[in-house]
Image (cartoon, rainbow, N blue to C red; front, side, top):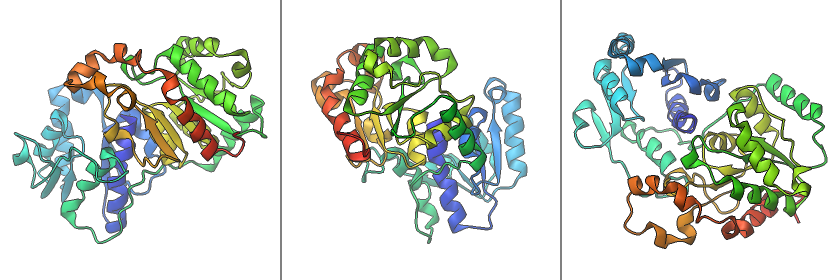
Amino acid sequence: MIGDVLISSIICNNLRTAYPDAQIDYLVYASTTPVLEGNTSIDNIILFEEKHRKSKKELLNLGIQIRNQKYDLVIDAYSKLESWILVLLSNAKRKISYKKPGRSFLYTDNVPFEALPKTNLGLAIERRLSLLGPLDLKSPIDPIPKLFVYEKENQEAIALFEKHNVSKDRETVMISLLGSEKLKTYPLEFMSKVVDYVADTSDFNILFNYFPKQLEDAKTVFNACKPSTQKKIYFDLLGDDLRSFIAIMNQCDLIIGNDGGAINMAKALEKPSFIIFSPWIEKKIWATFEDGIHHLSVHLKDYRADLFDQKTEKMLKKESLSLYKEFKPEYFKAQIESFLNQNLSNSI
């Protein structure tokens, strides 16, 4: 959800440029608000909470709250049951979303839901920007999500690096160690090899991104790394919350690892990224800004296309764990080394 909310914020950013005096509100899950802090394109954040999902009465109350604002325009980038209901209740003069069967009557403008990307922005970006198409904006379109870090947060991150005696003479690599779920997490024994590849390329500082509840899995990866790699890992350097992670990431030079919120936040901070996609996730959607230099990604389909013949997304998700076992880190070792060499000055 963090990645979705951050990327969808480009709609707000471009609306602000086109309509500087407009009131622009953003409806998001409560847990995602840290990625919106400091964004002046957004006037009000409306929270979608668990109670709205569990209670029809609470959802109706939220719809009434939205209706009372008398919005001129509602853009539905979520396009699922909860948002359909809120759009219906909003009574907005103009309503824009994707053209999908059975729901076009809800909207005044139905935008094609494209299947293939036209640029290296990736479908996740292109689809959201397409929602601005009916407005025929005259201002230039900015496709890049933005994250804002306060100076106090930067200083706290620097102090944390100093507390852990992170070498100032070495560049720092963040490892997106674990996905949001098992089906989006590169096998731990393979990830330890990836970390070894990073460590062997040059003398880097290495940080692990994981939640406290994922501590045991993080230890499993650490313990499987070579002793020479372990010496370069600052295992306990973690933030207390999402904002502190953002500030820590801002002090790093690039990120490597599982697709997810951490990767999207790093990109918004203009950090180079190397993504390892889950076998059931479509690379064409989330491989944003892919240029083969600063942003690149790998997918099992790149190496074993035969494993994907005649398989639907549902089938791939069901087989994801077994497919992951076929995704050997040796397949993309050279690409990791090339990525590091092109983006870090200390690489060999």
